[in-house]
Amino acid sequence: MERPIRLRRSILSVPANREKMVRKALSLSADVIMLDLEDSVPVDEKEKARHAVVEALMASGWKGRVRAYRINDMSTPFAYRDLVDVVEEAGPWLDVIVVPKVNDPAEIKAIDYWLTQMEMRLGLTKKIGLEASIETAQGMLRVGEIAVSSPRLEALVFGIADYGASVGMPSGGISGHGDAEDQEAARLRWLFPLSRMAMAAKAAGLAALDAPFGDFRDPQGLARSCAMSRALGYDGKWAIHPDQLDVINQVFTPSDDDVARSRRIVAAYEAARARGEGSVAVDGKMVDAASVRLAQVTVKVAEAARR
Ligand code: 1VU
Ligand code: MG
Image (cartoon, rainbow, N blue to C red; front, top):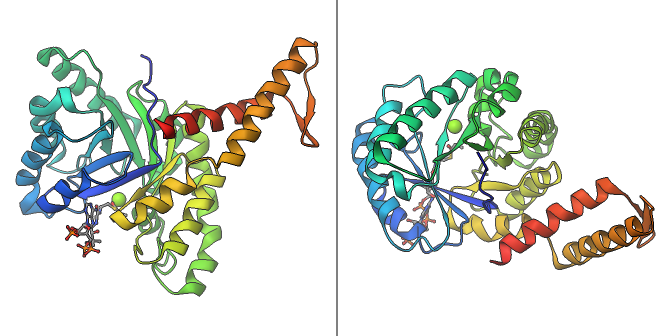
């Protein structure tokens, strides 16, 4: 199964039971709109929120944005209804389902089977994609197996607050919480889990998506958080508030200089290969097959962002 290529710099999480926010989301500059049925929706609103997801997925005005929703996790009494009720009604309009707190590859395999049955019954020709959220110690331990558990998987998502809770981290320094000193001291904590998840995602050919930054009134803190995950190979980051979208889109879009340099690298390397050489100097730096692969990723993301 060929994985669709999707632009995923910014993913806006929208509580599905908040009608006004759902409507507003379609006017915002997120690449992906992710209608949430999980942690931002209270238990007694889950059923109403499922209907809202169906309505929103089928609404007009998406304009090329990725249509996503998040189910509740597989240990809850909600997950199967989240899947069946939404996919049976709005399956043809849906691009991807986000599965939270994945601890075991069997959870993704089970969802894959159910989706296959529903797609057959509904006569859907387009396969529905999956994203697995890694936000527990168990999930992080098995992230390599989870990443290859289904050809439907398109991305792994890092869930920072739940991961912090699951390993017993203090909350100061998580996702913008705590003071400046907490933030600075906490930066090192994220290097290992962020890198581990990115490595598993990229080895399986998936996108790596970073968790949201909770302090939506701190654009500098958000930019620092984006820069860190971008540097570690992440493709995009969740947003929980409209004001975060411009910063995220900017950090995860290659700059004009980056794109121009990448094109020079690809051209110089192709010329070198035609001469029978495998390395060449560009702007005083060595370029070989590995640098060309990096340059091609940059060009591909920039072209997708321009569309
Ligand atoms: O200007 P308007 O009145 O028309 O709209 C408000 C507000 O409704 C809207 N807005 C949003 N629209 C779409 N999606 C959103 N996520 C969203 N957030 C706000 O923007 C206008 C300005 O809003 P505001 O500054 O007055 O902010 P509020 O006090 O209304 O809302 C703040 C919170 C944090 C409550 C809100 O942004 C929110 O609920 N965000 C999403 C939370 C979420 O999805 N949580 C789950 C994912 S995160 C996770 O799983 C764990 C880390
Ligand atoms: Mg979570």
